Length: 216
Image 1 (tube, rainbow, N blue to C red):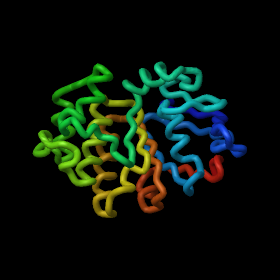
Image 2 (image 1 turned 135 degrees about the horizontal axis):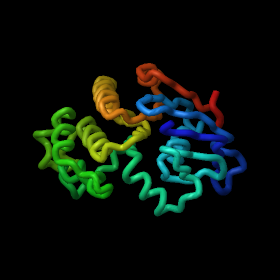
Image 3 (image 1 turned 30 degrees about the vertical axis):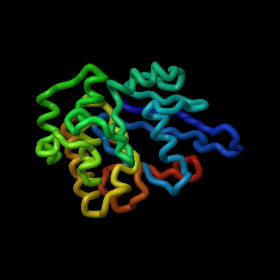
């Protein structure tokens, strides 16, 4: 089992209402899952807990059999670095680095940089002619492709995508999602895609819907 959540809860300080009120589900290796829900339903919070970007108040969040909940910040970061890749809606590219350096950044941190892997990714994502450029010189769709390449370069076991096409037009979003699905499938990784789009969610083989912090 790649991912296992059991009775996961989360309440932010100052709030009387739990963002997540006991969420449980499992994800097998190689499975792609769409996570949907209205704004404020807890989608991004849940993704952040799975990615070790935040901690649950209670419950178990286990990736590859490792429960992330009791780990401190450094422990979660070390685990995430080599095993979990996160793609953000805002791309989060480093503006002072070229496309080539941005793509290699995460893999080098994880000690898993593979030049041939990077070349293959840039070819598949249509980035070969843009490696010397900086993020500000790229279109939104190109920047998102760089973010995908950076995430997949270390060959993570689990890929988390938080509204990865939210800033793109419909045609570009379709193309980017197709590329992401193909590349994830080739590696055998799992994918959890947070999206508000019913159209995009329908393209994934499995779907969970969050409503008021609970799976509906």
